[in-house]
Amino acid sequence: MSTRPPMPSLALAAVVTASVASSQWASMLLWMPNPHSHMVWFPGAVLLSALLLQPRRRWWACLVGTALGEAAAFGVLGVPPLAVTRAMLGSLLLTPAVAVGLDALRSRLRSPLEDFRLLTAFVVLAGLALPMLSAGWIAWSIRGTVLAPYLSDWPNVTLAQSLGNLMLVPAVVWTALRRRRAVPVDASGVSVAVGAALLVLLCVLWTWRVPMDRLQPMLMVAPVPFLIWAMVSFRAVGASLAMLAVGLLAMHFSAAGIGPFIRDDLATTTVAVQLWTVALTVALLYMTVVVEQRATRTQALQHAHRRLQTMTVQLMRAQEDERARIARDLHDGINQSIASIAIRMSIERQHAEGSTRALLSDLQTAVTDVSEDVRRLSHELHPSLLRYTGLPDALRALCDAQAGAAQVRARIEDLPELPLDVATALYRIAQEALQNAHKHASATVIDVRLERFDGGVRLEIEDNGVGFRDDPSTHVDGLGLLSMRERAREIGGELQLRAGGSGGTRVTVVVPPARR
Image (cartoon, rainbow, N blue to C red; front, top):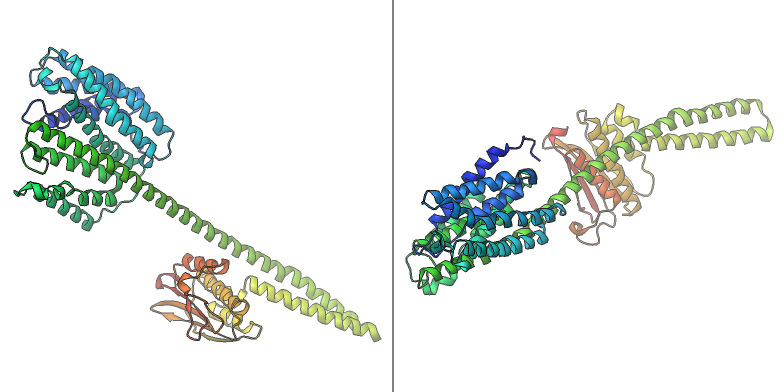
């Protein structure tokens, strides 16, 4: 949300006044030569947009600004302010009612940009009910006034207001909402160039002086590539602005007597343009909702994935800290106590005789074995060699300590000192890979290689076990493999899992130079 202070009410009224007057003049520029044919009417859409974007306590400023803007626009033409006020009264009363309904529905929805209920309500209320009622009021209120020849055609005025609401309100509201909750869009130079080329091509096709009877179906759908580009690249904002541009182009060319919508008379041409634009706009709005749903859900999934990765890293760090604490307690506490017991037994054994001496000797051997197991467990939990002598020596000790039927062959280069987090992650990956080769792959030979690679470090563990039973790319990671991938990602490396040369499995981790 923006932290900038809101615009003062009088300034807001002034902005609305200027916007309404400008939109009224823009609407007049798109009138057909026949005074009874209106292409589009934007002032009502400007008012509805302002009401949807402002708190209700400031709606009075929007209403005052709209009345002043309409009076100013028609005043230049010499229309009495009283006649303009009477004609606008219905819109000034009905538009806030529609805004209240849309605002109430939007407040109950978490994501108004991608909700079909809100869009349907907008199409029904702002695209159908409001234009029909407002045009009916205008047709009744202007009887006997100078506006009667221009605004008495109820169907034409209804379509003009509906078109203005459907094209302008989404463009304004969605643009304002994007500033509050930005979702990344494809605004690359190539994408913009493609859109500009499609728009130029559309203008060329619509102004091309060729017989329209055969090419008319193609020219009717000519804007579709441009609209799809805008929807895919810029989603709701792009689609609404692109539809506004296409609608204005269709109206401008039709008013000039060119394009695929030209009919026998101006009134029929106007209706053809309006109906085509309304249908295309509504269809595009619903398609845009689908695109927004996909974009928002994708962003939510990416955000959840990033949070999960962060939590996973924190969990692994906490796990390492806890392992270090337990290993320290085992080595400095329990193992020292066991060593003291062994010493006491050795002393007692020297003074004992016969069977007692033999029993104490056996007990001392058992206690020594327990002490060795505790030492080994402490080393597996948190190897001290990793901290004091570095990763190469720790890996050599890990390979030498592997017990079982498998032969572990280590080719480990001496490397410059690595950061502790990098060394720890590589050690844990090697530890997990060796365990998997022993327990799950039934390997008899395991090769462990640590070497420099393109200025970085590469760790590779390959076995001759059972390997993959299917394509490794379709292999579903277990908890151990997921842990290995997360450890590699944490240090900025990349873990690859593929079939080995001898039919087993090869695990490769490459750490770039930046983390060495």
